[in-house]
Image (tube, rainbow, N blue to C red; front, side, top):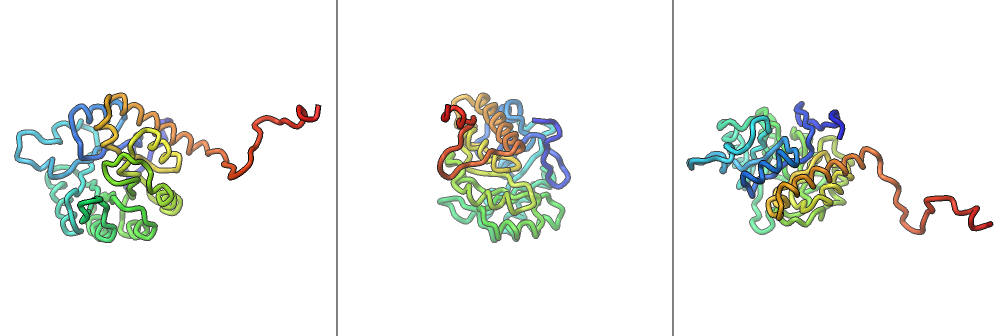
Length: 257
C-alpha cells in the first residue's frame, strides 16, 4: 500500500492495518507478527506483563511497537479501570483495550459496562479502544464516551469462524465516524481481506496465526490479504447483480450477423 495510507488513533498514525491480539503468545509469533505481518500494535494482557516471574511478555515486544494493554479478566467497569491504571503505572503507556466479560462460556463483551469504563478512562487521558458486540446504539454511546476507535467482534474469541456478525459490522462502518477495527474470530487471510473490503480500518488476530502450521508464512499471508482488501476498498468494488447477467463484452453485433 501507499506510504500515506494510514489510519489514526487519537493523533497517532499507523501504516500497518494488522494488529496482533493477546492470548496465545510465543517469541516466534511476535517475531512473525512484526517482521512478516508488519504489526505496529501488539496487545497484551496486563496480568502477563505484571508478573513476579523472571520473564515478562514485555521482554519480547520490540522497541517502537505500540503496546495495547487489555483489561482481560475484568467483569465490570470498575475492574477494567483498575487494570488500565495498573498498565499505565508499569509503563505500558496510555493506550488501553477495554475487555469486560461476565460470560465465561461465550466470552461476549458487556457493552453497557464497556461504555462506563470507556468514559471513565477517556476522562483520565487514556486512548481507549473498546472491544464490543456490534450494536449501533452501543457504538454511538462509545463515541460519546470518548472512544478512539471501536472494536466489534467478528465471531466469538478464538473461534476462527470469521465474520459471523458481518452485516452488523457493516452498519458500524457506515454509521460511526471512528476507525472500526474488527477484533476476534478472524480465522484466515480471506476473512481479513473481506473485512477490509467492507471498509474496516484494521484487523486484529491472534489464534489464526498462533495455530497455523507455518506461522511466518501465515503472517505474510495476512499482510498481503489486508493490503489487497484495503486496495479493493479504495478502488471501489464493482456492482453486484441480484439476478440475471451482464455481458463483459458487447455481443449484439455478433448475435445479429
